[in-house]
Length: 291
Length: 296
Image (cartoon, rainbow over all chains, first blue to last red; front, side):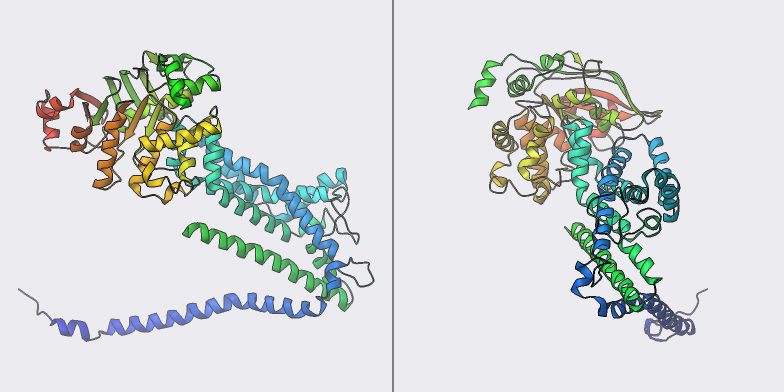
């Protein structure tokens, strides 16, 4: 017994009821996700606009080149303080974190790798306030409120980032490249350093830059360690230092339009630096993928 | 040429001496490398070699003698442990987690697995070319060739330039790349990359060159070039090549060893003999069946 067969022309051109419903659902979904996407970026746009509008009147040259107690007050000491703290954090946690990542990727046995990865996950999950509390209650009594205590707290946060990113980019290095080196009679450590790490170097540096950016924006640990100061501090990590997040936090609670305006202006500087870093890193990653 | 002079001075040095010499001084090492092609060494003997991945035995009791300065082809169906076997010869097998080797493999009478042979030194004497061309992506053409020398040390910069050219010439690549030595190795075509990898391998002056299906990723023209090269290299090196292509085995090899696997999927040597004989008049029915394309 054969069922009647519709003509091909009819099959192709005559819409069915299910088809109309599908088209309606399609259209509806399109609108829903479109509106959602717009809602998602709305706060970001609002934030950027607000920061720029509120900051603009206060972005005068003296703001960048003077210190808080000067006649025309500025936040130079916070800008240089932030760069010094983040810089030293990366200088200290960078080599250790990268070495740790290299160890996990190139030397460790599978069991050690599994343990190490769990430890990194836990460390990545440490809230910055916890790192701050640790530094405040354990390190500050010994070191005092100081750059060193701040750098220690920030390093707790950046170390796992550095280890993870190093391990991950090394994982992308083809095993065939390592074998090629070993088969030439190159020792394991030289293969790790001059072949694996060398091949993954752009990715490893990207991790360092992102860690720098992360350290730059951290607030809680700094409030509990470096504490902020009105003085300009160059490279004296044994005493208090100013930093942009500290200024933003303290000034926005302060009385007076000037300080609140300077909080906005500092926020804009911090945002521009962080955005620039992220865009640069993105550009690098895209380039290295297409190359 | 300086290297020529050194060769004549050290003409009697063999692989045995090089392996046995515990702490080779850089200068002596370089001299020995230079003399590699002159000595009539490179006899490879496999005795009851088994290779395992954890509990799984991939190669079972292989006993095989490889003549110096000849090409020996390892053929057989997929998964019969040919690649695993050649990776035991340069001690690369043991670099995988859980991988072990038993039995003995000796080169000119020196057991490559004895306690006074460092695996790193064994790999300098037994070079390897892989299935897929694997030039170092961050290095230029000339850096790729010199990588083994630079990373193992003991060769002066002035020597290296000469060795790079010499190795590229031997790998039949010099004329194609002499004007772009500073371009990335990965900018070359697949066939050129494989010849670059061969140049890189012979630059460290090994005595034995292992090739794991070196043409399987290449087109027929590139394959033919590599095959010609293998024939040329056989004048100086002992070559063991794994191939799935039986025409290739018959074209390039002097001896052929046929492998199969038993019920436990462990690879074993069925028979070995001069290539012409293996392809026209094999002793085992299994070999005949495989060669005539009835299985595998």
